[in-house]
Length: 317
Ligand SMILES: C[S@@+](CC[C@H](N)C(=O)[O-])C[C@H]1O[C@@H](n2cnc3c(N)ncnc32)[C@H](O)[C@@H]1O
Image 1 (cartoon, rainbow, N blue to C red):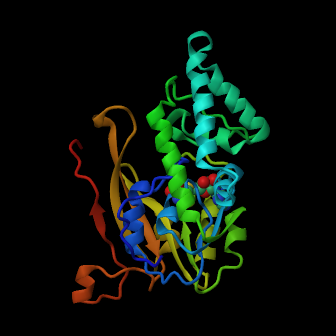
Image 2 (image 1 turned 180 degrees about the vertical axis):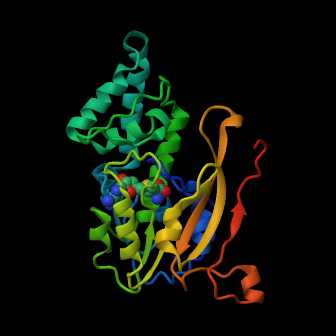
């Protein structure tokens, strides 16, 4: 697949994680220019939503979270099938519901403990889809520690079918592709990037609480900025730019000189509309790998460009 491209329908992945870019996928895919000849390199895979929608022929896919990589590698090599996913979620989902009356949430915690002992990718999927807010968080011993979402009938038939269909969609996309999966730190993934490759970077957010498998420090963010800007090929970086309380100074400090496109979106911090917050998300793109803006075509301007595309109109401020 070449970029820019407009996804007809955004593919939603079966695994959820903090910072998932589902809503930003069209914006990302329409902002980047890439001929698709080299590899799509994605060192911070997370849920995989960007990768699956870009749908590259060749890719290097990595994350420090071994469970994310094991799950998608399993679909890629055929050891995890939609039928196995259905069977697992039906069996464990039924037990979750059955035991709730007498043992409350205990079955969720049985699975969580089992996963923390043997790391079964299907248990990881079960937890990702029944934990609180779809969060992925581990304690300092590397043990998954997110509590239950408190919905005993979580795995209703329609919900299981939805997840199975998401696995089917991912499997279909992977078919016939030359994709390499790695559990790796980003430094390792960037080590052999070539001029024809395109690197999409979506590191954990600085200055916000992170709940990932590894910690993300200011130093990591600065090192990443230096390394990315010395790459031989193109890159794009997703990063929050501004919310109602603060501006992310890391963008100006470490990424100036590149093209910055922005999009604002809204998220809920609680159950009510009044708690809705907006955030401006930036896509920092290496010069020369950005799509043109309509007014640039009429009057070319070599300076870095700012664009704001509000996705949804706020009903409450
Ligand atoms: C913001 S999330 C990526 C979200 C993803 N783009 C999506 O849309 O779902 C950041 C990811 O980076 C991973 N990560 C954290 N530190 C890392 C490191 N040093 N090297 C590689 N991956 C890392 C986390 O495990 C997490 O999956």
